[in-house]
Image (tube, rainbow, N blue to C red; front, side, top):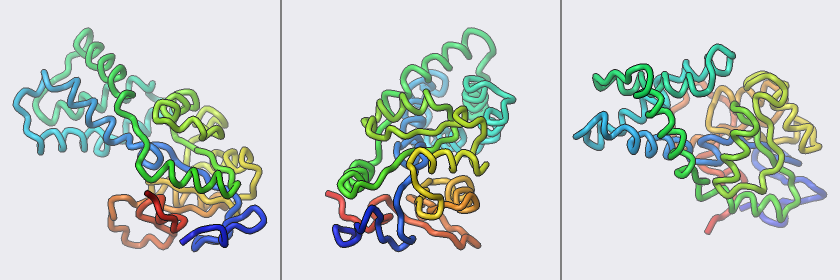
Length: 249
């Protein structure tokens, strides 16, 4: 278990190596965005899918959050606006159930409703605050690097009660997205550490663990669901508590 003996002269001795700072992804790493999205999606779409059972709503959420991510990639590439990609994902998910979300007022109302209610469901995972408390006590600096714009993610962190995460890098901060090395290295610069002794933790194996490692950091895949990863040879953890082997209440 990590404890006072692990903190020596400003660094932590961990199973991943000696670290002087920690950077986190945000969505589905610090905050449970999938829960927020799927709950909000059901609230604003029930009138379009009356009678859909729980299994159907789970499938609807998976389609929106996972199976149409190419729209988000196009947003990151500058081909779509944020609202464009959100609407296209919604239309694709509804389309799987035979519902055509018409252009114009109907689409506008759905998009506006989703944008209004989704932030209320954003919450931090239970293991986040205990880990941040531990890092604060150990005087280890931390921050976040996200594949979304700074101000949007700043508001998300604040609404989830994570105002203490003050160092934040978004895609508009340096003009690139993960896995470009510059976005991770900007986070390192904000921490005042070196890449080789900075831990980067995120739920996306490619963008977080492998991308950060390629940029010279200690990339760790936060694999909360125990997803199989054939061929993955990097570091992984099942929870943030496991990350530094600390106990949470």
